[in-house]
Image 1 (cartoon, rainbow over the protein chains, first blue to last red):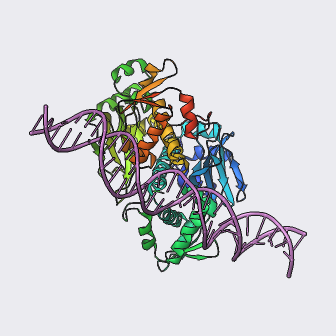
Image 2 (cartoon, each protein chain N blue to C red):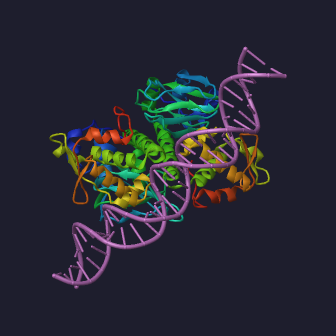
Length: 250
Length: 250
DNA sequence: CATAATTGTTGATCTATATCAAGGTTGTTT
DNA sequence: AAACAACCTTGATATAGATCAACAATTATG
């Protein structure tokens, strides 16, 4: 196989609408491999609320979120549900080497995913160490996030859980960068109360009550149902129970 | 660099006391790489209760559990603790590319770890794709386990949590293979009530009460403080709340 | 052997969150 | 504009698990 020197400039144009370029696989790929990735890539769109795959169903692709938010959830026989993954743009879904999805994958908002057929993706992975290395890095990040989440589920109060979730979304929501002017953060909460309750291991009534409590105390302001304003991020952070300095991992 | 054809037979003798051979990195390594791993490998022993590293402390090695059990925990400022990882023999600890430990690593029982200095390990990883691939596979397994754990923390009752933990340990404890004669499983519970409570997000009193309840109902028998007998594994499984068929991931 | 330390059990009580129930907002359809 | 659906809020009450407290069993120590 002939190897071509990396041509970051040129391929970044070839696949500029693909978030994989930034976070998943293409970062330092070589151009010829990248071409293969381009060939097995396709896009799928979902409306808010739609299911991408059900747990146990065949899933013959891996994918990266382009826009919108996807969730991974597990359901018990009697209907109790727990969200176990929250995928924001550039996050990766699907496990190389597994035929079926272990989780329900759902579009929390309108969603566009960039999909790669699994078989060819795996073959390219074998030939392109960087892809595997990048995927390892991303998986380790996700594992750290899952562990932070376990602390939240196991030990935090309802109030701390809500404050934590708002901070997590505020930190990750790219759109907020724009309005972070005078220390005030403004962004759309992309989850329903029910989705929040599934994330936090609470009921939706408890979520609603704690949101109201934070609102009454001025820790957050709400405009409409979903728009959130955090007047003083550090003050909200104090309600999360987390170390003030500890780097967030989500 | 000259490449040598894999010599599985010969190197499996070279490092036969190293669990990494089986699960972490050596599986399909080539002999010359393996020699390097041998050179940077060393063993460390800890007594039950000892701390391996504190969260935030420098950790300049990655390691694999040889014998015993190690735990990863997070602590909040006010002392609330949540276990976020349970490492049994052959499990891997430490993150390539990170200087400090994100968690308290503790010996739950007497413990022997096989350590690799991080810098050289990372260099070998770069040159030996199989090591990275194996590590990715293990990390994905851990992520699945973490997500199963999140369901437990967020949605299961105390009784279900206890039953789940006993089943998880029963399944993974190698020693039980020996006594699985007439459908009855016998093994040592390697965790104190307090460690169990940190795993499950409960208090130790609740753990003790639920253990007593399961004992009174004949779902488990106890001999001494730690030895557990499960007379009917399937019956205990029904108490976990999990799908009867769903493959366990831990 | 007696004493202390560690670990586990059980009881009484409290409380955070779940559950059950009603009503309020917002946005959409006709 | 009325009717409806989806989503959210708030109140009353119940309850699982936490907390506080005492004691029992086991192991270690002088």
